[in-house]
Length: 206
Image (cartoon, rainbow, N blue to C red):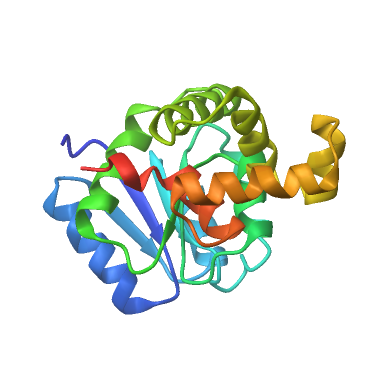
């Protein structure tokens, strides 16, 4: 990998931050680090970066406020989100931000490398086009029907069972069955895990 690519790793967990930085430097990336959203903002003001790896729970980003600022100030910089506490709210919010992967800690080095490489390769791609590619990928891998693919798109965007039923013009019980089918086909235990997996594409990471 060319050393011209610069990655900002922002995480208040020093051990995790240093491990990620070491892994990426070993792959030839230039890496700068920050221990908070404020520190990350200072780095971005002074340094051109090609990718951000950011923790959700670090100071100044608990509600993804820093990522929202990043989406406004540097819309072409892709973001790989990492978290030890996934939630439906933060995973669904990723749809509206320049997030290209949503990874759950602990993260295997091979998964991190694959997601960083994929994110850098996809720079400049419109967010909606990226979303559609991920949807097509999971539809194929999980062997979803047309209706289930529609449901997956809505669930990833944060739809409740009631919202899913309204969007699909079906009964709430039918919407619940769609969600159950998605969890079974994806092998995920919860909506949050399903959404995180949608973004991470761990099933094909190499």
